[in-house]
Image 1 (cartoon, rainbow, N blue to C red):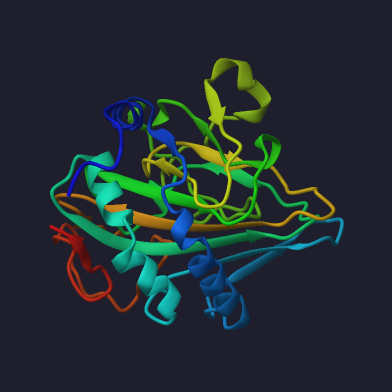
Image 2: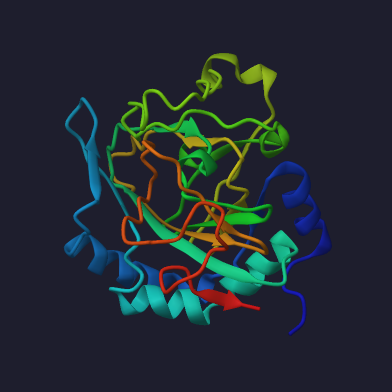
Length: 266
């Protein structure tokens, strides 16, 4: 199969920890919208719904439902997502970690706090990528933002829930810097995106998003978390991970394996 992405895009992902992909999933927008409709009608017990102080729209967050919804399975196994992931990670193998749905309805006064994904997770590996796929028009002022190059800092910051509370109070990690209070000190990047575009980023890249204060525009996004060569399971006693994967019996340091983490390529 010919290469999908330009070399410049792959280099940008490697150097900055984030890049934008235009129109790569245009043919899959309706499939993912249908899947999200089904998911919101039948959420997992672990789904979370946040509401701002102003009592506006909901911020709906759910994950690990791909095996329950045919639209999600269709996208994960039949779209070019795995091939794109392989090119970005420069990896022979691509494995599914999980999917993540994030819907900010109109007038959702709840921002997504600055964070890294990696410290939340029960997996690790030298090659990681999230594909954040908008299913609505997202203007620059409400898009996901990233601190360029932060994946190379060698830092792991304390995970927090999307309401700002710590996931683990005594995890030994430091608080994330106050990006909003000192934006001039960082290269903050973000893009206006359309349905079918994708923003690809390393699990270690710091990112966040403002509240959706639009009175009429919702922001639906489907995020696919992929892993490349030599992915390993991480088990830390007394530490809550998100997603938790309580049914997985792998030991700390085991190669990632099992029905929960299918190999998509390689």
